[in-house]
Length: 93
Image (cartoon, rainbow, N blue to C red; front, side, top):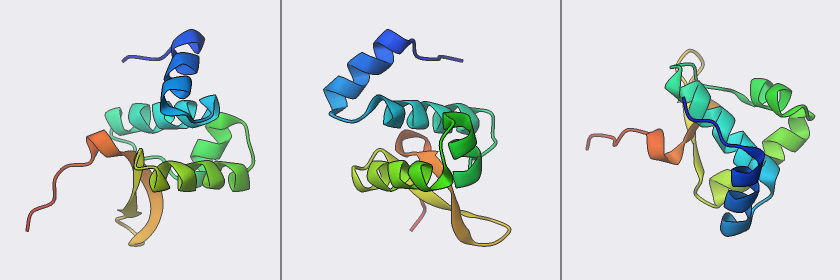
């Protein structure tokens, strides 16, 4: 599994014009998706060591910028987990 170093996180954040914490959020989402374990807002905030409000704000910005998409949680059909945009399969029809 590829993980980003602090230096590459900083370079990517600068290139995307986004805070480094947002790059780290995307990295956590991609790693969770790769492990076939979608990540929700509470777990993402825990991994980023921030409040759920700050984590949700970061995700909302990343969704708005097109870096993440919200994916409904199958059990509740609520938009409670996130997925990296590059990892979301194309939908039929």
